Amino acid sequence: MPGFELFGAEEKKEVQDVLDNGVLMRYGFDPMRNGHHKALELENDLAKKMQSKYAQVVSSGTAALTVALACAGIGSGDEVIMPTFTFVASFEAILSVGATPILCDIDDTLTLDPKAVEAAITAKTKAIMPVHMCGSMADLKALKAISDKHNLILLEDACQAIGGTYDGKPLGSYGDLGCFSFDYVKTVTCGEGGGIITNSETYADRAHKYQDHGHDHIGNDRGAETHPFLGYNYRLSELNAAVGIAQLRKLDHTIAVQEKNYTILRDALSSIPEVTFRRVPEMGVESYAFLSIFLPSEDIARKAHKALGAHGVDACFYWYDNNWHYYKKWEHLLEPKSLNTLSKEIQTGLQKNNKSFDASDAWMGRTISCLIKLSWTEIEVKDRASKMVDAIQSVV
Ligand SMILES: *Cc1c(COP(=O)(O)O)cnc(C)c1O
Image 1 (cartoon, helix red, strand yellow):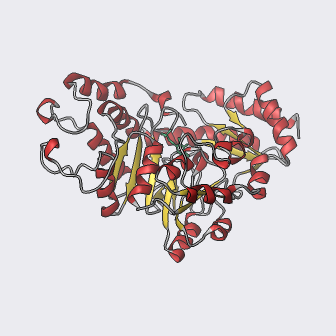
Image 2: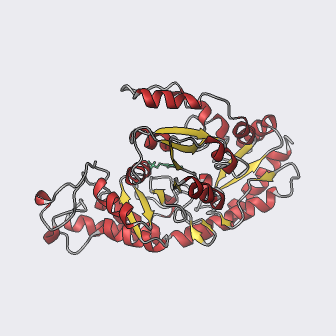
Image 3: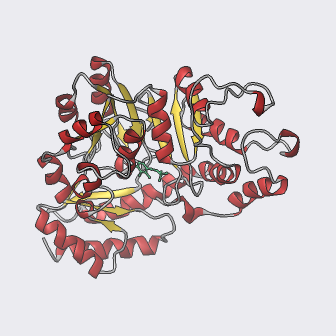
């Protein structure tokens, strides 16, 4: 997955354009910038690549989620349904707009279980936020039907799945809004950065203003611009955007390499009857950022994870015990622990999350995900495949 593995002359050239004129900010300074508008160029490229009408780049994936929620008018008193398995950024973004994250079980897709989502909907629910974890997607058709039925916003967190598709559409482009992260370890990286895609002119216009203090971006004098509504600063710098331009151009190649490496590992592991694979919803094509497998039990999964390490196979994750990606370790959300006082409404709302998520525990307890790297040679992947088979066979 990490796009940084493919850093090269292309990224350097784009960054050099910015260094040559010295304009590091995306707005203003037109006479000095020698025609370079890297953030704008990245937005145009992203919209095109993601088959969406509009794209907005911002300073991180977390910022993308925050801006997307704000654009959809989500705030105080609203509930947003999110999965138990995701990066903590999902609940941070929801809390940061004043809304309440409501945890919801996952199924064998390792993403939101549509049945559990339907059961979690209340009069306060405003949005469903599926997270396409580890390169594969939620059952978007089912989630779209639920959102339409209850008049909810469908916001895709595609931060870990850029390049995957569903029903022929790029992940992120199926819902009302889609978000990407371009942080250092993602498939496409800007160093730090994020992107929002949408087909809604209204959301796109709001995003454009909200991520820059509410600036209306009319005319050439920033000081004279008006502020139709409150905004914040989630701007992406020209330097970061420049890296992203070169990285995004490599996306098809990146996905092809991931698919090749993934397939070698998957074919090898298919020889072990006790190993099964994460379910990819019908009509979905993965980005192949990770290969996620199920072992027959939690006990065997723990042993397999240890054995993989002992056999020298790195970059395999047992998320069930992870501090950042699974709800069980999120005491700062569940208690909650906050530096400032959260509203009574949020505190009450968060209490809904203090329950057991048995279905999630059952799937995650059995899951191991292996990162697919881009820099492996074919010999290295084959060697890894045989080590993985040996490691897992030693415990099943
Ligand atoms: C990385 C990530 C984010 C946040 O992105 P940042 O750019 O690191 O802020 C959000 N959601 C998921 C699923 C992620 O993996």
